[in-house]
Length: 483
Image 1 (cartoon, helix red, strand yellow):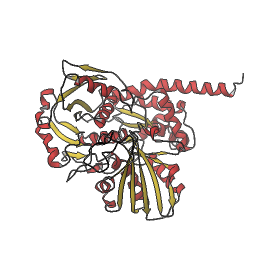
Image 2 (cartoon, rainbow, N blue to C red):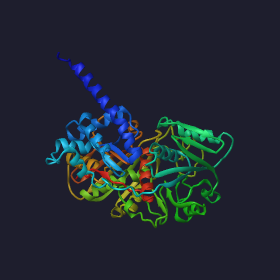
Image 3 (cartoon, helix red, strand yellow):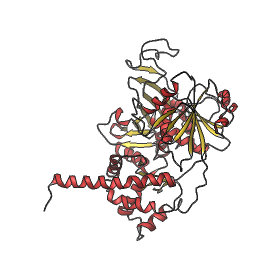
Image 4 (cartoon, rainbow, N blue to C red):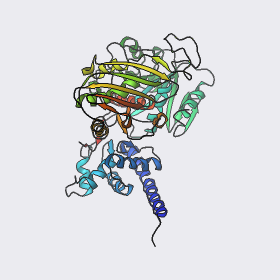
C-alpha cells in the first residue's frame, strides 16, 4: 500500500519523535554520570526537549546542505554511551555527519572512528576537583547564572552553587528571592523544582541547597561557617569596579577568587571567553568578564581581523533598556538616562568599543562607539561598520563567518543565521555571545557593515560561566576537532 505524502510526513515525524525520546535518557545519563555534554552542531541537548533535539538536527541541513537524520546520529550517541570517557563536550552531529558523508573514517568501523575522534577523553581519568561558588548579588545576571549552574547540577558538576549574598533579610524576603528565580518575565519559568527552606535560611532547587546570606558588605561574611571554602565569588552588584575595591571580598573567610560580571577599571583583566581566556593563570585572583556588548562583538572582530585585517571602524549598539534607567521620567545622574526607558530611544555612550582593546590589543585605537537604548527589555544588536585591509564580497564574507561559527575556536561564541524573518524576540535565550545576521551584511570592496544580535542577559551569562570554569581550572575539550 502506497502512503500519501501527508501520511509519509506523519510517519517520518513519528520516527523522529521516537528517536528523540530514546536519546533523552542517554543524554541525561552521559551528563550526570560522566560529565559528557552532548551537542549537535553546537546546539546543546542537555536538559533539551524532544522538539529541541529535532530542531537541533534540522540546523545541520542549513549549514551542510544535506540532512542529518536522528536515526543516523542515534547509533553514534548509543556507541558513545558505552565508551569509557572523561568529561567533555561531544558533538554527535559533527561526528555522525563526518562519518556518513565526508568519508573521514577510511574503512574504520563506527566504534573505531569514535575511539580515534574522542581519543583526548577516552580512558582518561577526571582529575578536576569541584569548586564552591557564591553569587554576590542576585539580580538579572545573578539569577541567570544560578539557572545555568542548576540545570547542570549533579555528581559530575564541578561548579557547585553553595550560596547567594544579598542585602535585606526582612520578613518574606526569602520567598521573594525564590519566586524571582522560579519565574522570569523574559526567560520564562525555571526548569525544575524550587522550594524555600525557612529553617535553614536557604533555597532548594533541583536537589541543590543554596544558602541565602544577608550582608551589607563582603567583610561581614564568613563563608566557612556554612561549609564553604576556597570559593569563587561572582560579584553581580556592579558596586566594586577596580582591584582595590574588589579586594574587599578577600576579607571574607573562605573566599579565594573574585569574578566581576561588569567591565573592570584599573589593572583587572577584562576577559572575553574564546578570545583571551588563555591569559588567566592560577595567580589571577580577580578577573572581569567584561560587558555583554564587549562579549558580543570581540569574537566577531577577532575572526575578521585574523582573516581580513581591520584598519578602523565604528560600533553602534542598539541596546535594550536596563535597571539602570528609569521606568518614568525622574532624576538620573547620567545624561538622558533619566527619561522613561519603556517610552524612548535614549542616546547614550558605551565603553564597549574601547574595551575591545583590553581583550584584543591589536585593535587599540581603531574603533569608536556609541549606544542607543531602546524600549525592549532584552536582546540587543551591535552594528559593526568596518574598513578592512583587503576587498571581499558579501558571499565570501558570510561564508567565512558561517565556517567560523561551526569549525573554529570561536564556535561557542559566534552563531550565524540566514533567516530573512528573524527579530529580536527570536534570540531570547541564545547561548552565544553574538549571532551574525547574514541577510543584513553589507560589503562594498574593503568596507563592510555587520549586524550582530545578542541576548545581553542570557548569552552574556553563558559567557560568564565559561570564565568561571577557566578561573576554577575546569577545562574540558570540545570534540571532534574539525578544521
